[in-house]
Each structure stands twice: as C-alpha cells, then as structure tokens.
Length: 222
Length: 44
Image (cartoon, rainbow over all chains, first blue to last red; front, side, top):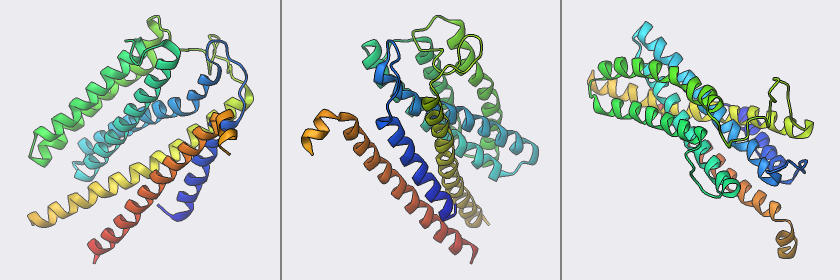
C-alpha cells in the first residue's frame, strides 16, 4: 500500500472516532448515547460479510485455476472476516450489557453470529487438519463456498424472521426508507467507507504475508 | 483538565480510542514496511 492510502486511512478513521464520540446525536428513545455504537458495530459486521464474500470468490477462482495464491487469498480474507466478526460480537455484547443488562442473551442476532463464528472456526480447523497443500486448498475452497451460502441467512434473514430485541429500524424503516438523522447518517456512511479502506489495507498485508510464506515453501521444496 | 474530563467523559473515551487507533496504525504500518523489505529481498 502506498503512503497516500495510509494517510487517507489514518485521517478518515481519526475523523470517524471524533464523529463517534463528540458530535451530538438526537435523542433516540430507549437508546440515548448508546446509539453511537452504530458507527462502529455495523461497519464491523459489514466488513465481516464483505471479507467472507471475498473468501468465497477467491475459493471459486482457486477451483477454476488451481492456483495456490488464490487459496491463500481466500484464507486471508476468511481470517480478516473472522477477526471482524469477533469485533462485531464484542462491540454488540458490550452494548447489550448496557442496554439489555447482560453481555449475552441468546438474542437471534447473537445466536446467528455465534453460529457464523463456529462455521468459520471449522474452516480454520479443516485447513489445519490437512497437510497436503493441494488437498487442503481444494477441500477448504469447497467449504468456503458452502459456508458463504449461510452468511446472508444468518446476518440478514434469520434475525428478521424471529422476534428480536435488537434495534431493527435504526437505519432503514419498515417501508424501506432511510430513517436516520442526516448528521448521524453522514457519520455512519463515512464510517462504513473508512473501515472498508482499513479492511483492504489489513487484507493486503495479510495476503502478502501468506504469499511470501508460500513462495518460500515452494523455493525450499524445489 | 481533570475536571473538564470528569464532566465530559466522551472526550476521555475519544482520547483512549485515539491512543488505541494510533497503536494499531503504527503496528500495521511497521508490518507493511517490513513486508516490503522482505518482498524486495525475495525478488533479488
């Protein structure tokens, strides 16, 4: 990554943090200042979905080209996605403590993100259980594709078909119209953008590390 | 200063968040620079 990109990430995340904490927000019944979690928690979930999608795309590319670089890209994307899923779980759990009274309530959203963590945890177990690189890549690519099929269900569908305490109409209301104060909406969208930039930097670093490892292994073998 | 932070705890949250973010940024930047060095060595 070039220095200009890094400076943009540095400045934009700093602005997001300033916007998250000190910019006044309108009173939201039942939430108050706790509504500020939306600037951090939702981008974490968005990045988790994005990285699992990328992991699935790289897995498809591996199966088409049989190129191990695509496999390490899929692995890196799944790792970063897993990290951001944990961050979304932790931020949500902290918010639940102050809003619902306990860190964990087995709310449909909490249950679905927990199952998602188990699904992707199994992906890493699968990878570590197989020593042969080609076999590992092939099986884990198939697994990553099947695992992603569950992501839209657990993130978007299940929490909406089961009754939940989780706020559902903070961004978009029941009629599909944007239901957010303009100042909050602009900070929220800027936060999504900034965290996406940060995600691509982290992903880039992770992929380059894995590619370097791969090239050293193939050099040692030859 | 302490009185101000006691009355405006959001600023204290901001300071802590900025310190953590600075740490993450510097760490990520260091890994990126070290990776560049290793990639150059690998190409030679």
